[in-house]
Length: 112
Image 1 (cartoon, rainbow, N blue to C red):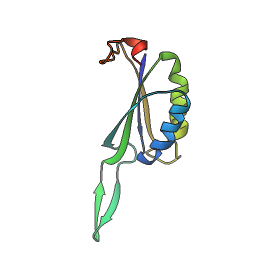
Image 2 (cartoon, one colour):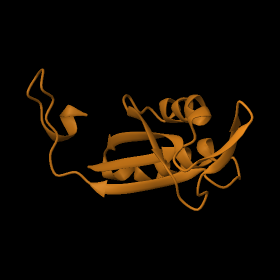
Image 3 (cartoon, one colour):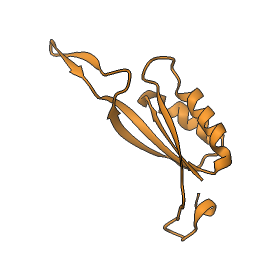
Image 4 (cartoon, rainbow, N blue to C red):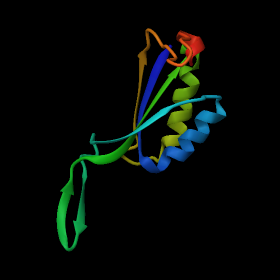
């Protein structure tokens, strides 16, 4: 099993969710996060005063899937989240050793 974590722009969430449900992905976790990369923040004006926003709002998606689904999930995420602009985000894939569904006690692939 694998954990796919994606950092995306907030307005791309609906397109990403539709792409993942189209693949049969049944669940994901979404967290609101802030951060920066090459984008390094931006300058905004509030009540006539200019100020720097160093940490930009992003969404962090976490999806646990079977190892054989990684390529198609990463491709769907990349296609749906891409705007072509700096700050589109990143995708990380890490191994998952064990999953347990709390309600039923099912483990690993049955718990997905």
